[in-house]
Every structure is written in structure tokens, then in C-alpha cells.
Image (cartoon, rainbow, N blue to C red; front, side, top):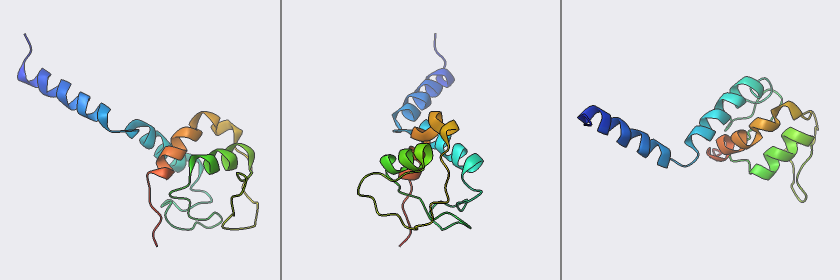
Length: 108
């Protein structure tokens, strides 16, 4: 027999599973905090000491910049410095980073 607590817990877990990409966004936030804030602002909607604001970056841009230190075809960079090195060690986290950055909106 299920107790009210068990039923409530199951309902809460089911609802949290409905939040699209919630776990991936959180994993991306953690990856960003651990790897990106050295150059980018801890608040991705603001410019950092070296890197620009990157909130709202599309997945293609995140993948190209993080894995290859390149820009996707046709993309116009915010800065022409080319200081960011490739970070191939983040290959397993690039989708989560893109989910996190894509979940944020740039301030006007």
C-alpha cells in the first residue's frame, strides 16, 4: 500500500522530469562555473574580463568555440581577439553548456 508521502514523492519526481532539460541546464551551469568564469563573467549576460557576454549563445556556436576555437560558418564574432583556446576536454559537457547558455537571455 502506498502512503500519501510516497504518492507525493512520485508526483514530484514525475513533474520534475517534465521540466525540459532541467538537469542538463544545471549540469551546464556547473560546467560554466568550473571552466568558463575565469575569462567570462560569472553572470553570462555580462561581459567578462576577457570574454564577452555569452548568454543565449546557440548550440552551434558553443560547440565550435569550445571544441575547435572556431566560429560557425557565417557567424560574426562580438570581438576579433581569438583569445579563447579550444577546450576538447569539455566535449562531454558541451551540450550541457549550450543548454545552460541557451536558457539565458542577454540583457539589452
